[in-house]
Image (cartoon, rainbow, N blue to C red; front, side, top):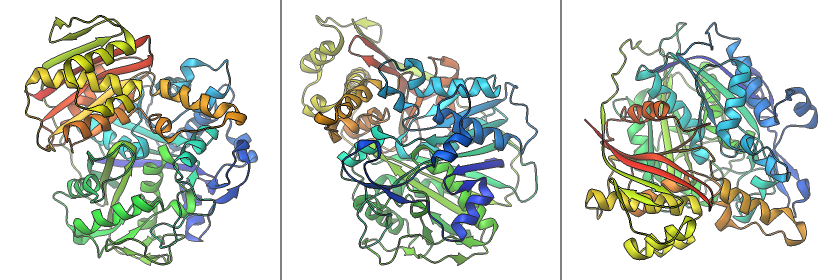
Length: 566
């Protein structure tokens, strides 16, 4: 359990948490329709910073993405007295695409496109001495970052975590969502009969967490759970399997009667809202008030989980449950308690629920005025039971070099044909996922496990340096020439590095946690801290984890292993 000691939000609706809350309380929304922005052929509604706001928040020497992080983190730190130069303070950044707009220029700064490197730039400018961790777990990134902070502090690795999330909208992102026909040209209508799609948004949100409260009546994050649907990389489970399991996990040991509400993802897409309603009903929470904030902010991607958690905390501080803007008539089959009108509440806890591409789902339980927890959980000891290493030239399984005749991408295809087979979806995967698929298949074949049944007790936790750069470049090439403009959904979905964890989960029927982290460079110490803290989830008995990077077809680097509790 960790405690919030400071927070900040900067969005098109305002500067600071209080100003943002007051804007929402008055019913304000920053959503509006944009036509021909970035020369895109289709109109879309979004919540974007104005040119004046961009100028105000821009920091010299930083990109706008980095500037937002710097500004919000600085504002949050001003509310505390912590020494960020200390070795017991960690910066955790949540984002989906970071500085991806740099790809528009042929002479782009290669390192700064990688989210871990961008986080390192911000970290250095602020004065952190520890290595930053970037969570790239699709739409659940912000919530997953808060869960990671909870675990790392609860494990005793750090005393404070600064968690900040943001994404900047651009042609790359919007064109990709348009290729899925997922965007609405009008302000979104979450859970409504007439909903036609989501809106994107820009914001940055920061929460500073401590292993001890510094004031009475502090908010605490008590439980967090991440689960996978093991169903599809871009479509949620029809039964809300991962969301249902995440909800149940976050509420383990908690009294439902003390909950004020469930703050949901509520993207206003046909399938997300339907899935969430089913998950809520399956969890027997249908009578509990439910709300979503996308009608005010749009989908702020890497910021969403943090921003929506902060706003929900603030609203409960004011004894209010904000209405779901855009909702009028129920358009989902699951029974839920949702309203466009704000409600009063005298309860002091809630659940945040969110889901994303790659089949990932996350939920966290937050409560106010909880009994202070003084004990630190001792991290689990781990052992590696099997090991696979894949490079551009060779593959080594448990110390034995496989006989192969090809290199790079052809090496992966050769091993699939000669040693695996029977899973033609392999040929639809991008390079990173093919690499992860081959490495994980060889690892699991070596272990001799029975893989015919579903399992909830295995996590898939992977790291890299270059995120999804190979697919990013392909998508960028598809949208660069407006005379040959053709964003492909089958390419765009792979511009999220966590899709590889989803592919592994689907293949092996894993409903446990799937998480992806981007580091400035490979660092075994940070990786082991995260592995050990993952075992804070008592349901997790083993981890398929390691390093997996595919910068291009000539630079493949994977090292995967099975980790067990000792």
